[in-house]
Amino acid sequence: MELDGLAGKVYKVTDWLMMIVVTNLLWFLFNMPIAYLAFMLLVVDDQIEVLAFCVYILILVPLLFFPSTTAMFAVLRHRIMFVDDDTSILKLFVTNWKANYVRSMLGGSIFTFLWIILVVDYFFFVNYVNESFMYVFMLIVFFLIVITLHFFSVTVHVHTKLFQAIKNAIIICFVNPLLTLIIGIISLIVIYCSFQITTFLIPFFLGSLIAYIAFYGFYRFFTKMVKTIPITSEKVN
Image (cartoon, rainbow, N blue to C red; front, side, top):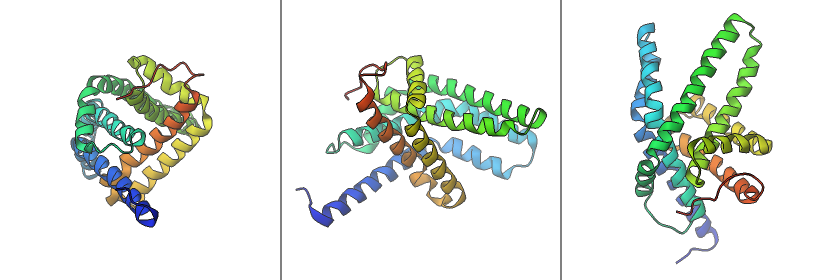
């Protein structure tokens, strides 16, 4: 029986919060090795150990972070599109993690490589050429964050090959600058608040809140522009 009035609104809000929290906890659990290594980076002083932990993290990002983030996007997509479906979040998460693992890992390898190049170039140009390049790289980082988020949305929502998915993510990023600004700014605000103000909430809200905003914006844009942008048909499951 569907609740009406204030009780119905309270139920919807609590149900939404539960979805966000449970999905984020699963995402965080699947990324525990990365979280542990990131924590160790904060407590070690030896440069060799820092370098070793960074290498371990870079290896694990395509293997753990990208597949689990894709699964998280898939769960939130399902809940946005099929509001009345009561399939368990755990089942949705694990099923999509398995189904998209190889594709996510390969895509994650490409994006990890791009991020490595960006970081190396940043330190070179800022430290050895001109500090003003910092602003250029900040802009590039902003766009790469949004493109990465769009890649997850495209992966779980559209039937395409891997490189076509990356191409679609880039197209969407630059075709709709307003969507790019909204997703990018909100994501940066959530990240900043999570690490500077409400660190204890990272396991509960960080990933899933950004993913929800990113996919919701992408989905609204997709439904309006699918006829004018070269993107193949959407998934239905």
